[in-house]
Image (cartoon, rainbow, N blue to C red; front, side, top):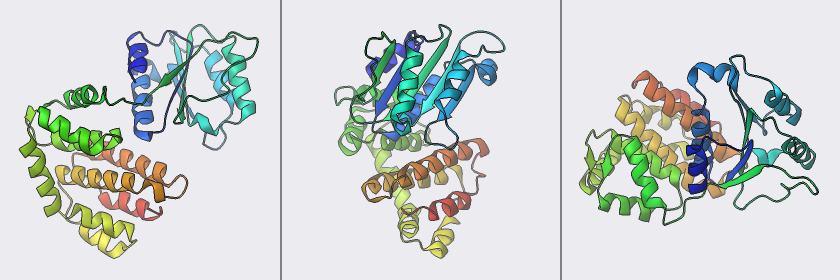
Length: 293
């Protein structure tokens, strides 16, 4: 992760990057950070995104986007996610582009992979492709937790940082979810007692009862319990409980089930914030019921 942050600070000077890790949350956060490097006023013309796992994806379309000049000038930024879905022929086309990239374009690729991917070299060709591992080492984790908390507008006591390290060391997405819930407390410094109180509040609101009903596909009970979650802080707590349970259930989910569920939760999280608690949580629950979780 440190290498990625260093390149981010420098404005991604290379024409091609490949970021990889096995954590969907870190891949998602990385994509957002890359997008934010493009000024909002220019994003409509200077930023394009492609999902290699989606219908109609082609490397040719990506290269065409990279070769195009933004309407307002400046640098063109193109993002490919789910690069692991691209076949060998497509990778060869990417490498062919890498041998002669556009000087004023950035291609940023995201790949769900535990280790550095193989096959991203072109024999006899010099390519400017930089690999960026996104994993967070145990040594980096406390600093990352404090930075995420600072981004939410508060700081953490040492005890809370240790608690998050001990309980969610391999799940940055869960840590981020917990920090969003803690932000609702409204304090500038979060102590361990605040965490305990929030946990008690979540139990009182039956968040995990609803999660269990969702897992059992008990639609009647799901929608009955959903009526208890109307205030913004209650909806955020419910999303946190769903995030936690779905992440813990990940090994038993069908292919693509975890990614679909997490995508729905992220979409709901943004809507909850935008609508200030007016988001109909039943919409999310109905969609989650269709996924085998």
